[in-house]
Amino acid sequence: MTMGAMIFLFVLLAVFVGLDVFMLVSLLAPGDERNQVIVWKASAFTLLATVGAKVLDVIECFVRAQPLTANPLIQLETTAILYFVALLFYRRKHGG
Image 1 (tube, one colour):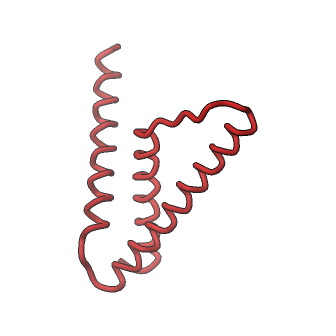
Image 2 (cartoon, one colour):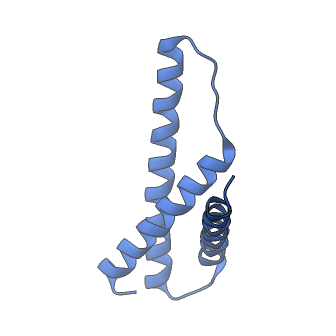
């Protein structure tokens, strides 16, 4: 693997770790009612999207008669990215 690819993957890993930490901190941080509503809406949207994607994955594997194969790291990072985007959207919408 070339040095440029290794640096890119390391930076990508650092961004994903940062998103995971941000997600946990924003969920645990106390705040006023508006901030709690923003976090609640972002969390609910993220949960709905994650569960919906998982249901579609299960249906697809059932129809194709294949075993379920899921990479938990990819699921975690997808959830973190989705939560971050939803949180930014709801903060902008509700003035947080």
